[in-house]
Image (cartoon, rainbow, N blue to C red; front, side, top):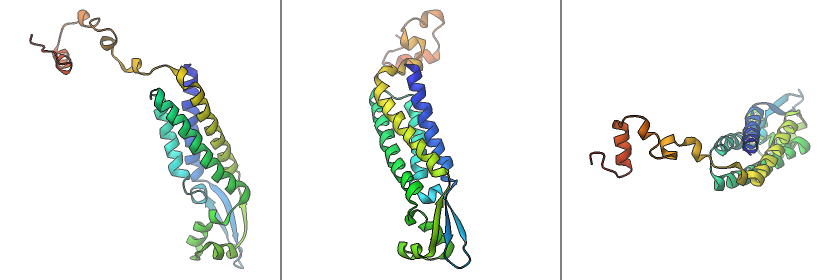
Amino acid sequence: MRRARLIAVVVTVACGALGVISATQTWLAVVLDDGAGHVLEVPGASAVAVLTPLSLAVMALGAALSIVGLALRYAFGALSVLIGGVLAWQTARVAFEHPVGAVASVVTDATGITGESAVADLVASISATAWPVVTLVGWLLLVVAGAFTLATARAWGGTGRRFRTDEAAHPGAAAGSRPHDAIDDWDDLSRGEDPTA
């Protein structure tokens, strides 16, 4: 089941990376009803305020998933489903409903007008680019990756053996093959043994 672990880790990290990239791309174009018809571009990070921090969290979660034990695999799988679901819902709203709230901060920065109703009066139209839909697909994949992690976590096997030395895995095997040195003395002390005895 090494392949299951690899698939879960790669998909989770890739979804987080997509979110980070998408946060800098234009999601919405706003035409203002100001006589000149100015067009403002709204990046993903402005349309969905939690996009960047949660995308970074997903990347970190995916990287950590490659080394954690069974209990944390279940926790991280559940977190992936939860974060993916929240981001999918918010992204879908932006992609299909184009809410005024998603563009309010950009309009306020450009015009100085605050308040959602005042901003709504100033907005002539809002159109979406392909980025919200592409990102939505990424969040749906994240939910699937989280569910896959929950379904296969027990079969991944332990990771501890990879990080143990041969001597830790087989006590005494390495000691007979080389002379005892100062590092071995420190190891003996760490185990509570007296190396001078």
